[in-house]
Length: 114
Length: 113
Image (cartoon, rainbow over all chains, first blue to last red; front, side, top):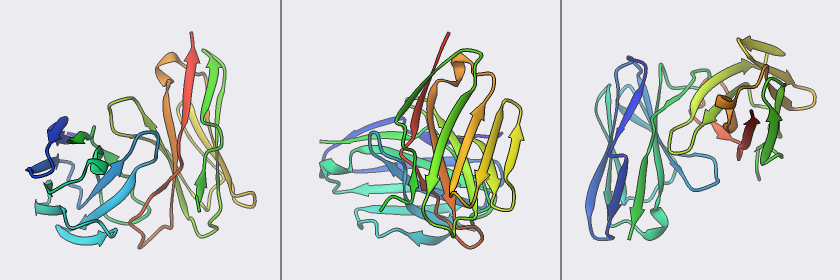
């Protein structure tokens, strides 16, 4: 298995809703990442987990809450989002955290906040 | 300040010819460079990488060249195929100890049959 899967593919939520994005990989990778990508922009790093511990939080608002229950799973819990949070949310993984490790991306979740 | 620049938003190439995608960077501390391909509604797919100690890396139809003195890298695709039509992102890393990839804005490649 050489892929990163993400569910759901599309999500529409209101500003008062609570929802979660899910990411899974079975490549034995020990680093997992959340990125946000707006239209016609490059991906922007949000969070990095290394060995299930949060290593990087790129000053992301607290309405985004990541969770890494085990080495294969990564969740992003969403609460009280704003319309400007609408974007493609990408999950990625790499064998290890660190700059010499290629990151493998999932297909993304297209999030729309109404 | 954009540290990784892809100055051509789009490129059109005839099938069978060479596609050359360019990328410039400003941070001389970048140590590792990657190219990703992205189709619409999909996540980026890793293509090829190069370490700063090399000036060329080849994988099948894809070759990446690095010119450190010019802070420039390029991706060559030979021969180009219609299935190569996608957005190509250049990314750079500060190497060991850095978790962040800095991406360029992408170049949309169209390969015309």
